[in-house]
Length: 172
Image 1 (cartoon, rainbow, N blue to C red):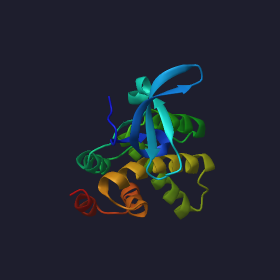
Image 2: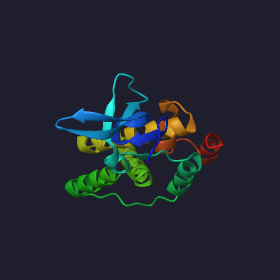
Image 3: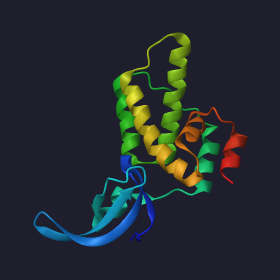
């Protein structure tokens, strides 16, 4: 069970603080809920039933885990999925799982393809752009919080523009 004041990652809401754990009456039955406050939106309050907590949100990654993921990414040789529908389904499944390492690989693949499209004068598909933005949101919130960097400083890490040595400095 999670504790109050603990920071967790909750889907597309990003990093949230568990403000309280209390019983609430929503609908016809009383249940115990985690009361979550997204750190990037002070006006939003989220309620998640305690029995679903571990399925809906998770503990934050450590600095070491994020840096290891970035190191592993330097060996990324994932092949681009040429068929649009198959690629979209594959990437949506990655986003559904919430596996940050896979989401990071997906983001890097989309970023690389977008840059290739720019260089060759081809169009980057709107669906790919949407998936890339969703992945970016899921990664930036946690990475910026854990690494104590601004969002705009995290983007070069995700795209690979920042060199590995700079990533390691950020991870100290």
